[in-house]
Length: 314
Image (tube, rainbow, N blue to C red; front, side):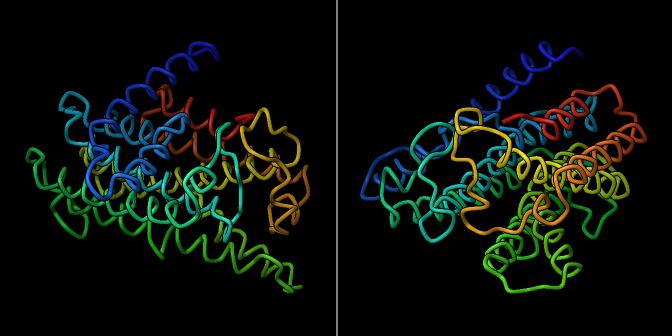
């Protein structure tokens, strides 16, 4: 698939994912109207809806002829809610203190830090309400060979863990603690950085692939392979983000560049250098593509999506 054809299809899939998301967005009414308005402002801030697109595609690949989008749609919406809440909180003055994201004012810049904090909280809670609703009302699925035979419960377990202290939040914690660190042991710093990239960025990508695979009928072994592919993509995605924070422009990224240096953040580029960082991106990409090939998905849209994520320019 050529670059132009792929990007056109990605836009169509992103639009479809956004249509799914809108089904589950709350109405702006009652005494909570302001926080709901801030939540919806955050959800509709643009973006390519990469995680729900990824989840939907993983589901389709494994479900095949049994594909029923209603099974995975609530989880896809929930994933975007969790991703969005993390961005809202990440932009707060107490975190990265960014005033622009995706080319427009961040939530706290429009609604204030307090309301933005509540909007993030609301999105996180709404995500679990949405996923649980989907799990409790979805059609019956085949038995899973993991720790639980119920695929919906297995998917919820992955979703919760990857979004929590053993996943994204844990990575964010390590990221904050590494700022202005006086640690001088280079090997320890590299280990911490790997943990940050694996969890802060990689966890939700892993979860998107794993949840889609579980709901689509994959075996535990296949789900583990999708987790590994997601880990590779997530780490490569973050390394590329670190690279772009140096070489790109605010206009291209839709947010300020140089924020990593401004916040004295430890990054792959600061520890390994630009050339080794670019080489590592390539290595991780090849490994992820080999996993897809082993699963029989070498010609899938998912492979193109991996390449797009890893080698993006913005």
